[in-house]
Structures are given as structure tokens and as C-alpha cells.
Image (tube, rainbow, N blue to C red; front, top):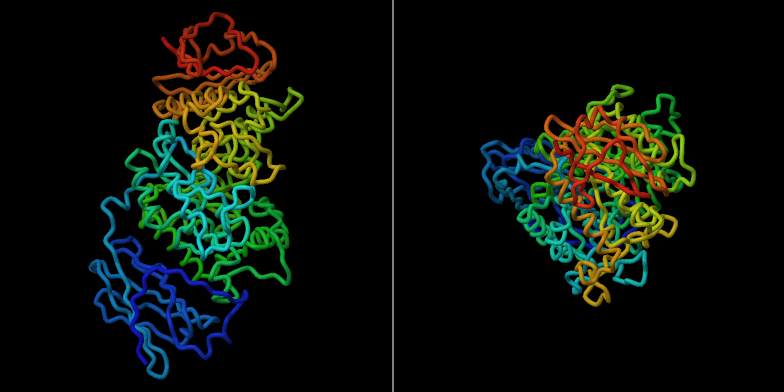
Length: 625
């Protein structure tokens, strides 16, 4: 029996129980429904490639190639006969094109498939990611803007749009993001981080994107693979970088691979549902118990998010290749890896190194929700490691600084290690980092209380936070809707803090994307953010300069960013009273300077032996000789 197939990308729906579908497949003829990756490229640094074949009754097949330069290294059958893994080696002389591969089974069964190798885009390997000079804008596509209402509901997708449900889908999409790229550029942003755009065909909570059901396809309610590629190109044309959000710790329980498990080793299985203890301290902890450690890394993130076992070599190769495929296919500039410390740390190191092997200047930031500085620094490249673990991860989300910033506003009492002193003490511990400027800093994100709420819906306090965001060491990450003064606390639920942008939907009564649709406070906020972000774009001393700070006194915190050519003085009054600041204590940085250009108010300012600050006032002063 011979079957010839040329597979294109298409979706399949597998309605089976979690586990293996042996009984369903016994009486069926061999067939192939998927090959992943769906195609590849010549000229990659790594010449070996794993191909996953999925269909029916493939377990007894072997792969053969008669193509010069395309060698079959190994064919691997696993527990579930619906899967076949084939490793091939590409010769450096292999040309772009479509090539036949032959699968042979018992009783003269044969399946011939065609597999495509494309030519890489010029300069693909040398693409540059984000860095210290970037301003990152985080957005949740479902909640940002609805540019194509026709894709709100898709027949094949379980969950439909319902804007009345804070935890449901609201209809935002890639077309909406593309529509407002100019808006983001005007706001002063240089890079856009999109929460996961992969298919999430889950019955509930599919809007956020973190329960993936297909790693090779964009969710059709957001758009298509081709539409995402166009979005990346449009962003690049406007000088904006794109950061893709990925998840390797878990999948959604409706993922086709979870519905028909390749083998028992692909996920971490427990006698009963066992969640993670979410204590990443157990990983670097030299005294951790094996019980606590295993529960941290092998427990499930949620009931509908099965925990992946990255120690399975077949799965590990599959995940690594998936990242490379998206980088090469879409042209993205960076990856933000969700729940970084929950996946196997050795696998994550291998993944980073493999990406860097193909794209040396590509950027990867890991979500490290760790509050303690030393435990946080464990994950940054170049730092001291317990147990000889050498992390290659360059960029980390700076949760220790976020916690200090948040609590500095929430503290009812000020003083020793309270209020603004928290920020001082946090930064004083930066010695634990090989390069503290590689931290991505933020005042909120999609998982956290809205900063305007943390600031008590006080625009002056709000300004304090923004000034620190755009002047402290690190790479600032800004969350969509902050410019519209969105509110919401974590205790209100994630669905509410991830609100819709006002004006992102055709019939919205207010369009705050435009100045005429903003109220007075929103316009002030927008102008402040735009001025700070655009100023920062061209301020090399803020990007890469050194930091020197002074002990807070009377709720006033002062720090300097400086290099050989420029000095910027930032001074913050955290108090609710006017503050008279004696400038003499800053003589080592001010020297003979007595005037400067103040960025927040866009005016020249001068001082003598003292400087007066209004309650909750923040100043950014570029010193003038």
C-alpha cells in the first residue's frame, strides 16, 4: 500500500480523552495529519532537525531519503503509535526546494511526503534585539483594539467573544495592533511585547493566551500566521521591534498533543492533581528538600495547564525548534519567556544557548517572579552560582525592584526601610548582578495591580513612579492602558485589571487613543508619558550611564545618572509636605553646576544652597555647565 502526501498547514480537531488513543487507531489505515515544524530553512547553524509526524498508526514506520544532502539519522517510535519522530541531517550544500521523504512500514506500507526547505532572509542571523535604549510597551492583543470584528467568533473555536464577561474574550486582534502602531511610536515606544498570540482553543479564559493549544498557529480570533508576519514587517518599517511571548512550562489541556499524549514522559504526572508550590526559592536553595523541589518544578501551574517535562529529549528538541521556527518565519526581534524558573533550568539554559547560537544578538527576557535579590540574580548570566549552574539568560524581569516601588507607595508609615527607603535599599543590593542594567523594570504589568490604583489615583504620585521608570537603570516596560489611567487591583481579578483600551472597539463611546477623547487627567498623563519616553530614547546617559544615589532624607530621594559627558539629576519628594533640600550634600555630583534643564516641566531651573520641592514632586534635571 502506498500513500503519497504533500502536507500543508491545517488544523485538526481531536476529540479524545487525555491519554493514548490506541484502540481508536488499530483498525485505521496509516495516515499523516501533521508534520512539525511544517517547513524549515537551509543555511542554519545547526544541521540536524527533528521532524514530528502525527496521524494514525505510524509507529512501525521507518524514514528513508534518497535526496543527496538530506540524510536520515534516526527514526524513533514511541509509546503512542500515532507519533513518529525522525531526525534528519542537512548538508551545507542542500538547496532550497521541496524534497521527498519516504516512510516504510510493515506489509509493504509506504507513505511519501514532501518537505520544504526555504532560503533564509538576508541578515536573519544578525538581527538585533532590544537593549538598554529601548522603551517596551506591553499589550494584551484581545484587550487592546478590535481591528477586524469578523474574526471575533470562529466556528472551530470553543469560546466566543463576550465583552460583558471580564474573564472572556473581547475581540481584540492583530489588526487592532497594526492600526495603532503609529500611536505607539508617537507615545515614545520602541518595542512592543504582545502576550501570547498562539491558538488557545480552551473553553474558558482563552483571552490571555497562556494555555496554548497549538504552538505553530496564531489563534484565528487574533488573525493568522501571515497576518502576524505582516505586523512584524509593519512594525519594523516604523522603527518598532516585536517581542513574542512564549510558554514552555505548560500547555493548555486542550492542546492536540495533550489530548493524545505521545508518551507518558511528555508531561509530569501525579496520582492526583498536584499544583506547583510556586516556591522558586527551592531551586537555588542549598538546603532544599527533594519533596519541595519536585513540587515546584513538576507541579502543574493550574488544572487546565499540564506541566511539560523538558527532560524528555524529543519534547526538548520540539520546543527549541518551535522558537527558532517563529524567529526565522516571522522576523521577531526578541522573546519573553513566561514562567521561566518553572521549567527545567538545564533545559532552559540549553534553549537560550541554542537560540544564541543561531542569532547571537537576539534578545531573550525571562519572567522571574522572584522578590529576593540574591535568588533573582541566580538566573542572570555572569553571576555566581550555587551548584555550578551557569545561567546564560541575559535579561530578567525585575520583580525585586517592582516590589520595592509598589510598597513604597502603599506604606502608610515612612521611615527606616519604609516608603522611598525601600527603593534605596533595593538598588543598594545591585552588587548581586553582573550587569544590573539588564533588568527589565516596570511599575505594573498584565498580572499586577494597575499602577494608577497603587498611586491612589493621584497624578502627582503617578508621576513619581513614571519618573523612576524612565530614569532608573534597566529597560523600562510600560503596560497598555497606563496612559489612559486604567485602574484595578489584583484582588479585583485579572479580567478587570486587563481592561479594554478605550476607543479600541468601533462603538466605544470614548476614544482615548485620540486627544479629543481624553479627559483632562488622561491628557496630562499621556503628555507626561510621551515626553518622558521620547526624551529617554535619545538620552545615552540614561541608557548606559552609571548610577549614584544618596540616602533618602525626610522622604526625599536623590540619584544621578552620569557618564563622561553628561549628568542627569533625579530628585523625588515622597512626602505630602513641601521639602527644602540642602544641595551641598550632592556636591560630589553637582560640582559647580547651579542650573539645568528640567524634563518634566520642560523648563530651565536653577538653585543655590537649597532647592524647594512641592509635595510628591519629581524633577529630572539635565545639568547645564
